[in-house]
Image: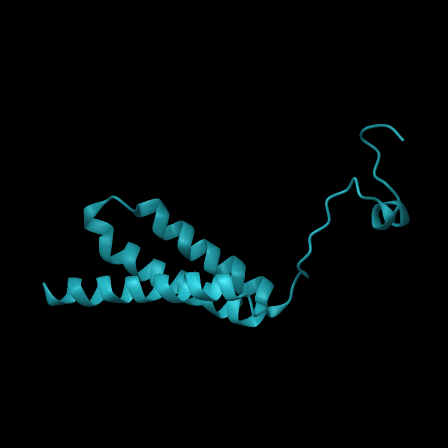
Length: 100
């Protein structure tokens, strides 16, 4: 097989040389994690622009909340802790910004 030929499905399935995603595609968690990632990346892309800080905060809260949902679906304790604490920090920041 040359470098540019695609392997047969059987060769792909039985090979350790080909990267295979562990997570299933097109399930609820797959869609939610990609939407969540878009929100987090959107927030990160405007971070540091002071005039857009409220939008950064809103996008971050939505993205982290969706990632928390994914982590609960996956029952991944590390992600649950990370996103729960992150969400608490973001909510605290939002409340403090509304009080000023």
